[in-house]
Figure 1 (spheres, rainbow, N blue to C red):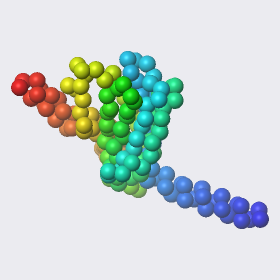
Figure 2 (cartoon, rainbow, N blue to C red; figure 1 turned 60 degrees about the vertical axis):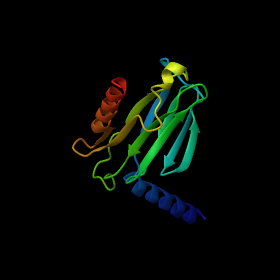
Figure 3 (spheres, rainbow, N blue to C red; figure 1 turned 45 degrees about the vertical axis):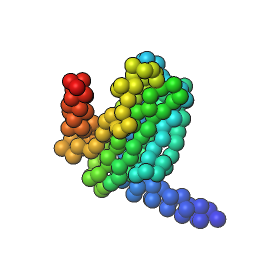
Length: 157
């Protein structure tokens, strides 16, 4: 019995260790008006399918463990607030020699008021992707620039 338990535990740890290279670690907090936001629903989509849902506790914290070679949408929503979406792209991260550091980011939700709805977008407000030259995850600067450009175009109309 003891040998079976040791074998099972060894296989579990071995499979977990081999997966660790292809799993990444993201964490952050949800805020509103500079205060941690309890009760925010964090829904994770892979493609069009929701694969997990988590509700933040009073500290506003959330964790996310994306697999390599995938794209995810993290959707942050709470009644009375505008929903935000972030895309996480883990392409080109399978079998890295060194795992990237934990990626930390915070999300700020705004109250759902008429003046804020003009800022609402039904698409991601940021794309987080792997930057191989730094071996780390970070925001896509190209995507951020295109959002600013689109905002300027809308403001000039």
